[in-house]
Amino acid sequence: MATAIKIPSSYRYYKLEDLKKVCGIAQADADKMLLPIQDIPVSVFLQTTIDRNLNLPMLNEKAKSELLVMPILTEVWALNRNFKPISGATFNVEPSKGLKGVADFLISSNPNARGIETPVVAIFEAKDDKLESWYGQCGAEMYAARLFNEREDNNIHTIHGAVTNGVAWQFLKLEGQTLFIDTQIYAIANLPQLLGAIQKVYDFYK
Image (tube, rainbow, N blue to C red; front, side, top):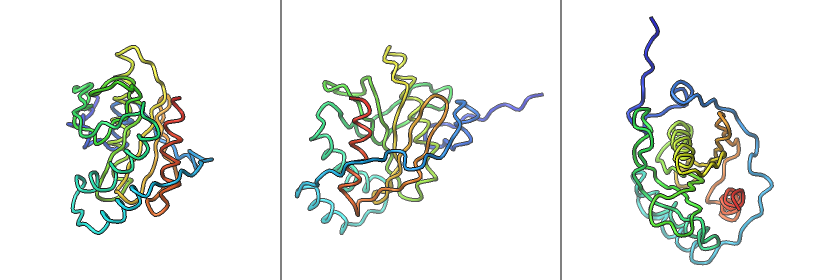
């Protein structure tokens, strides 16, 4: 008798092995996936904001999301007004597979979006510990984003994502049935390079 597949209760509980069993998504490392990258000059406002906020206590994901991640995403949004970061949205796509819950940041390339609207092109997850612990969650949300787009007749086949603990960022790409995980780590210590990496993701959809 075949063993029933255990379905995670939500995105948060997805691990890489669940992506494989439930969604048929394999993983693969991608060496320097986004290179070459063109550094983007950092505004005085962003640099001041990050330097100031780093002195504040950040005891959980919510604090890091608000104090470090959102300022960076709004900086890139100011240069790409048709890519809107949507924070803390409930994104229930296929509850029977555990593809439900709250996504930290969805990126829609619909310039008129007032909520979650297609196309959703990227998912960014802010966490408070090791990045590798959250590849599964981010990958599940990326897979859900592709399903969401397809159901709205917007067949974007490649979805990008990233996991960050506020200081370090690691990028992912869902292409076909493979979740590619960039081996390179980006950091707020090199903001021009990090902004360039996010810009490279957005440029993919232009």
